[in-house]
Image (cartoon, rainbow, N blue to C red; front, side):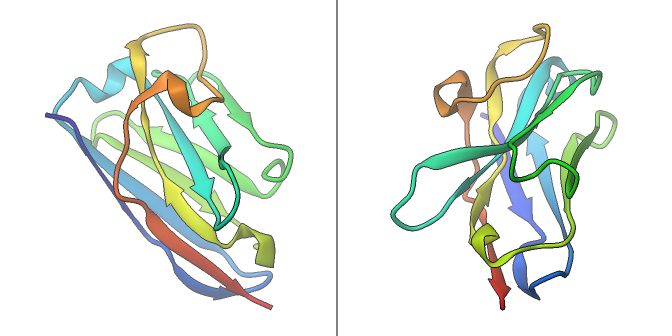
Amino acid sequence: QVQLVESGGGLVQAGGSLRLSCAASGRSFSSYAMGWFRHAPGKERDLVACIKWNGGSTHYAESAKGRFTISRDNVKNTVFLQMNSLKAEAKAVYFCPQARSYYGSGCYSTPSQYAYWGQGTQVTVSS
């Protein structure tokens, strides 16, 4: 059974930083692309960033480019999202899903391409 546990969320002032972590278990972590999505009230669940199974490529939403960095540690079965210069619109629950298919040439931008989801971690940015 796959388990994904997100942590690191919290309340931060606008302009501040947070580092989210996601610990994975139950499937060969290093074989699957991972993503970070966020879900704000009244909005769709949107991609923030994703990373290829071996960390060899990444993809970011326009809103995240230049400020957020996704990384992974395939020894510790953990994926990270470093978020800098946070804005109020970043307020959401953040999830780190694991892709349906193993290996692959990159990572995926739509929720349906991910098979497993954690409970999420809340990020709140005060202005």
